[in-house]
Amino acid sequence: MKSTEHAIYRQADSLGGVELLQASYVRTNFPRHVHEGYCIALIEQGAQRFYRDGAEHLAPEGSIVLVNSDQVHTGRSGTDKGWRYRAIYPTPNDLSSMMREMFGPGQMPWFRSSVVKNPYLSQCLRNLLNSLEDTSNPLFSETLYQEFFRLLAKEHGLKNASTNDRLLANPPAVERIKSYLESHFSEPVTLEELASVAGLNKSYLTRLFTRHTGLPPHSYLIQIRVRHAKHLLRQGLSLADVASATGFTDQSHLHRHFQRTLGVSPGRYSKYLH
Image (cartoon, rainbow, N blue to C red; front, side, top):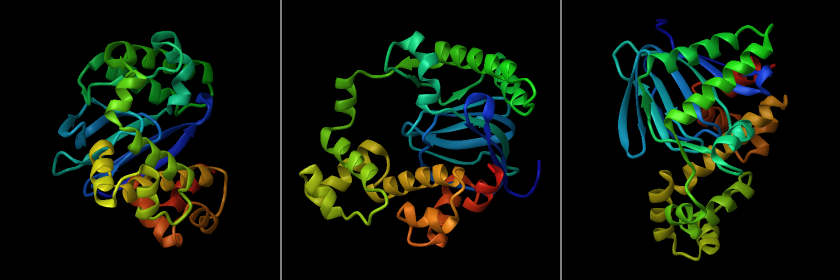
């Protein structure tokens, strides 16, 4: 395993641009964050320790890490020598047509397991990731992609909660705040604005939002900004323009939060994808 931290992001053109990651870390400690897509990672060496669903988990070599879309989690080494892994990040939209047949229109799987120790599934994921490194046979990659995610969803995916269940999990006030932050991510949002949107006092709003999302409002807003920054970098915008368009005060501000969330600087991320 390499002693230095490194991460390489790229897109799988044969899968419509699904994001891929190949990384090795020893000292990196990812704070609580979310991804737009599902995180499906194969631990190839070492072990990863991470938080998900209110508990700590350890993923050893050969296991699969499962994190649902927009689910708060962390990441750090589970050994003193670090961990090496490859991951694929399909968004709900990327999987929608495939999952419609299994779960019904508008429904997506919720992976209940945080760590899967199944040699056959791990080999299926390894075969998929290997195939995506060779762009000469897109049909083969697409077939493996379909087979793996259908099998994963069948064995470890639960049907999404009903609308009523989701509302109980996230009260309407929390949903209003999330929607407002999504719509105003590039602006200097204040707690006073959110209190007005939610119809709550600022202190209770912060406690309620943090309890139901796993992140305080400001941290949640940063995650939205990082996600939009990724999309703009993929389009080829400059770092200065991306920082300005996503509400970061400057390139340094963008760099700091981008690096903390993704383990790579925005400049290198842009370079990998162009």
